[in-house]
Length: 191
Image 1 (spheres, rainbow, N blue to C red):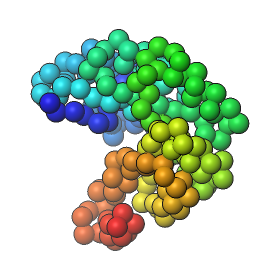
Image 2: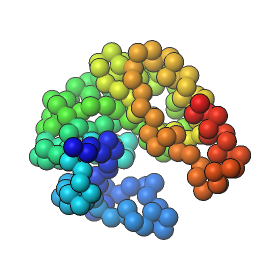
Image 3: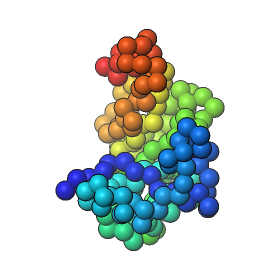
Image 4: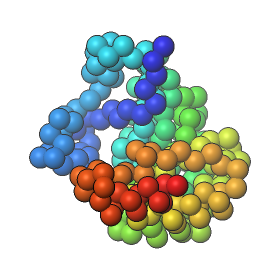
């Protein structure tokens, strides 16, 4: 069975996605719900998927978990909790106890929505939170761009045994061209 490790579900009538550019990303500038996923997956021969958060809000994670509880082909959810909040472990426990909570398989933060993503990755509370996720047996999905990969490398080292998953291959600057200086910087950072 083919498994898609990273899909997003969203209902734009309920919750807008600020980073979604209706011009550059017109193909995905629409609501995408479990029934849409099933139809697309059937056409592509995909048997199941993992839903990954798109917003830094707990309500979106709750929605994704509820979708996963109702749709068996949604095998898990990489959700969100505020790792800088003193009560993040309680928030995580509440998500795990709610509908679909057994399908919470990891945590991610849309660092690109922060004013200074590198500073977010370097924050001591984030480091402690990512380390804490590992203690709880949960991986941390890293959403970073090439200029942030050095600080991400330090975060991963400080997180000790936490499994970290680099999303979107570190967002290579493809539009600059494969032979460009930015692409070489991405290759070097990824290496």
